Length: 109
Image 1 (cartoon, rainbow, N blue to C red):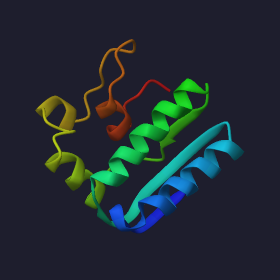
Image 2 (cartoon, rainbow, N blue to C red):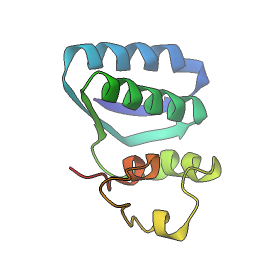
Image 3 (cartoon, rainbow, N blue to C red):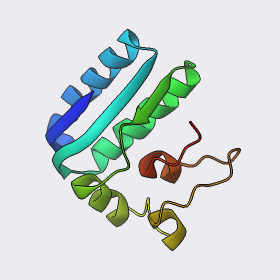
Image 4 (tube, helix red, strand yellow):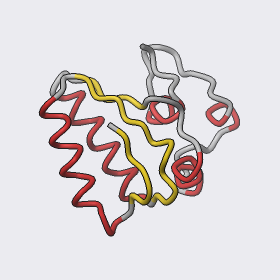
């Protein structure tokens, strides 16, 4: 699933519907955020909620690559990427996967 352009509160309902539909249709969902040029915290919240829903339904939701650009800037401003270790992409131990591991693409695969 590819997201591009702006993903903000203005189109959060559309983003939510797209995520729900894709998660219903696929047991594993990979999300590509490289083409995003505007992101706010509503998109971050939707991805985190989708990730939790996927986990609860024993499905897989992952990012196609580590966050960059507008999404990374929003995550940094929102305090989701706070430490030097997280910003450098240092993974947590396998039994302690965090949201930062999800964003930085360091989750155990």
